[in-house]
Image (tube, rainbow, N blue to C red):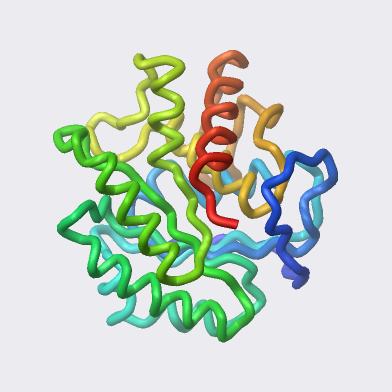
Length: 247
């Protein structure tokens, strides 16, 4: 399990996705619950680095993650519920596997359960939409639909990262978003995920954010992109949010 904490100041979340140049909200507090699709390349750390780049206020970006865990596994173990119950969160971002048609019922069930846990501490659950394995590329539509249904069922946010992959590929089909195993994200793809989530939890456009990131304490979470590539990914993140995000 990885945890990342910085000083905590509770404040209201900016829910609008409207473009703004104001500082990020002070006291932005996000908890991730997931598996290696979240901790590979340190997505929570990349999100924190993006928020830090805006010179905003204090924030807590924390995570409860274990390899090969689905949301049901987290529920049985109980660490995620205990961390949520600490309170002070704005967003609880939950992540399972692709959950196309075969995992849809479980994803919806646990989205509702985690949504209830989040509401008890005045937070909102968010569904981190991932992507299918490269060998099941045909499952993109199913993955997208499953996560949209789960977000609707839990009255949660939808973080359409898988759709941002498709928006990026529509601009440049050669982008290496899959890692070497054809399933986990490349550092570029984790950067893209962080852009999608950044816009939704801050209300700020991702366009114009830094093209290079170095996450404190994480040698593996380093991104140094060409400015044109970073701009393409930023535009893809903004497009996916504009098209698929829930209010």
